[in-house]
Amino acid sequence: MLLTGVITLAVFLLLGRALRPIGHILEGLADIESGHYRKRLPDFDLPEFSRISSSFNTMAENLDRSQKENHLLNEKMLNVQENERRYLARELHDEMGQSLSAMKVLAASSRAFESSEPVRENLNTISSICDDLFKVVRNMMQQLRPQVLDDLGLIPALEELEKKWQVQDGSIVSLHIDPSVTDVSLRNDIHLFRIVQESVTNGVKHSGASKISVNLSEITTDSGESIEVTIVDNGTGFDPDEVRDGTGLNSIRERATSLGAELYIQSRLGVGTIVKVVLPGVDSCETGANNIIAS
Image 1 (tube, rainbow, N blue to C red):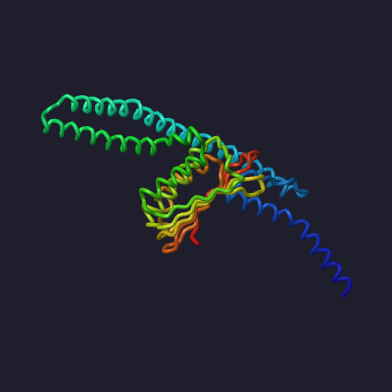
Image 2 (tube, helix red, strand yellow):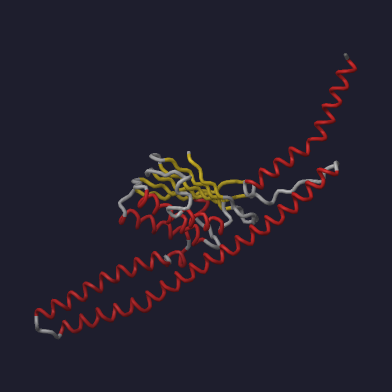
């Protein structure tokens, strides 16, 4: 009996040691499935497992390289779009703005020398129309490219956006910024700005949210100090399986990828939506993953 027990234990230990690489391989495959392509397997003693490890690492390297190339292409595409937006905003300011100013000056100067009351009223109408068009142009410029973002940075741009939401949409939008991130400077801060803008717009326009909170804070992750941006609304929510690429989610996903950020979108019908973006540490270059789930 004792001998049988010893043999059984020895066989169990040997099998456990021999099959241990399977656990590492399964963990590696799980990482690949989650979109984390920087995982590498060690060399194993058994030749069969060693060949699997080599093939796995080659596959992971190829996927990692392809992911980074796609990330760069996506970033270039988004930057081209933003450059076009900046150009159009500048053209609106220079051409349309100056033309409207000239029209208003001409209307005012003509009115000063005009004695006919009907004509003076028409000139007043022209001036009023110019004022209305000025507002439209300013709003279009803000949508195309917020000037405050270029002049002062992300935080002031979000603060200005908060004021605009309160006035135009009537929703209670609250912006909370941790003091540790007031000096945050991102190479592509326009994309984070657009993520917040799109998320709040979705909450107001599509979900009918009356309360939306936007929070920026600094957290510690495996890649070091990271910035976490969370947008929470109390709207109607949605079924992630049915609108996976709708309501601006695709744009949010592309911009998060451009930032190399982790994106989490959690929603449920009748409850609301949570959008969370985690910007990696400065030293991390791994492209982020996207997760859209139902709560």
